[in-house]
Image (cartoon, rainbow, N blue to C red; front, side):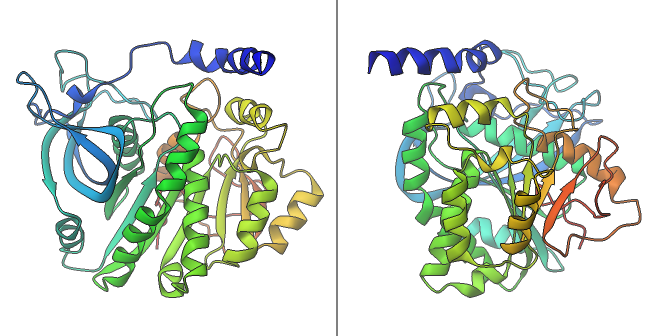
Length: 371
């Protein structure tokens, strides 16, 4: 056990070195002033985290890693500074400056039913994008990442963060896996509630890293409980999913083919997934599959999965684990090009230019489909 503990510490050193900067606390959720020339993104959040009350100096409650039994919901407005760099999050400091920082300008807590009504209140059927964050992620980190993706993509429709109770600490990998297991019913509740409302149009779900495992387990649960109507409403994307390949195959066996196909963004050089594989007895992670392998391509077609290698895209993190954040910025230019949505399973390579080397398509990622 001592040898294994030492190994775990050595493996996570690259992560610790990259993430040693102070992380944003609940303070960033306190609404501040808006800048007229800043873009404002409206986001929703549904979470099974417990609220923790603020202090007298900071009366706005945040969300902890404690597990709630019911979903809470909220609406946020986040301003994006004029000098925003695509793919990045300009975190506010102790004295937020909307000229250079992303800042919360408004917040309204609400029950889930009010969130659904708000989302569906558009004159026409509203498309919805649900983002499920990964391991080691706080509520505010997931919220600001969704703000960046939504802004950079120019995405239309409503963007919803599903924030499960990650411990938001590097050494809690196993605890986070338990937390996503706990969260399957709550994500299924959110997706089913959205799907039942006929005022809502396309529902796109993006699961990143360990959040991809949560999405797959939720899809499996929906199928096993006979909720096929919800599954038929979903368009699903997994970005760098931290899932054992054999587990993924078993999940697909239960879920069956989706229409459009389940889309998986992979990169063989993803350092975070290499570490995850070592922590999991060397088991390859789905997000690190090599689409150049003919066996992988054949398996993707057999299971009706679209595998897209995004390894040529720059990642905002040094581990190459968050390339989906940069794809959002590419989407604005990609949607102007002739192409077609992915309609066939198989393997594709996305080049730095935003073009597919193996087949033309319009990216379906982060809920950014152009329907």
